[in-house]
Length: 221
Image (cartoon, rainbow, N blue to C red):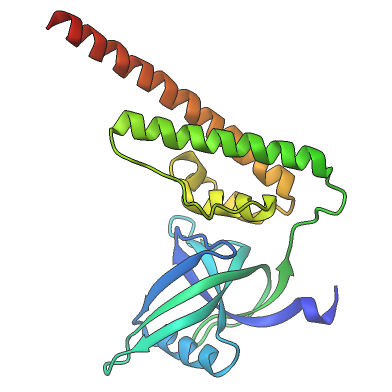
């Protein structure tokens, strides 16, 4: 492990929150220890680690995502509103100190895609995109409200996999930490396809049932 891949990083545990690379996370900082943390990171490189806190198990996840402060505003009472953006993922190696805030030794985590079959990866990405569009379309039809995907949807497989993990609710949201920890883009997209396809099938069945009742009501009237 190279020296550059390891560093000290202040940690901010958040209940049920999983930050992904290139995703924005606004935060309201009010606790004294995190005010101190913010002051510290703003004096250095404006970075700290966001880690999912499990309130039931009372423990932090082993893998989190580095957040960079890109906007901050502090009021007279010391509270701050900040906007951060996710950067590299990291794995906690050792907790160095816990006062006044948690400081840890971490190593960076990245996807190991050197041996990936690019053709298979692109084919999987296309299948995921189709499933994603179907889920959005069926959701719109079922709820009778407009749901659209952003025009700037990522086209690079790795970035698309992170976007899906960060933005979709339901069963995907329940697996966010597992998706964050995966270190292979193909495997992450493969799991997301399974989740999206399952959701698509459920939505299609509910939509068909709704159409059946609607047609029956129309016939009776």
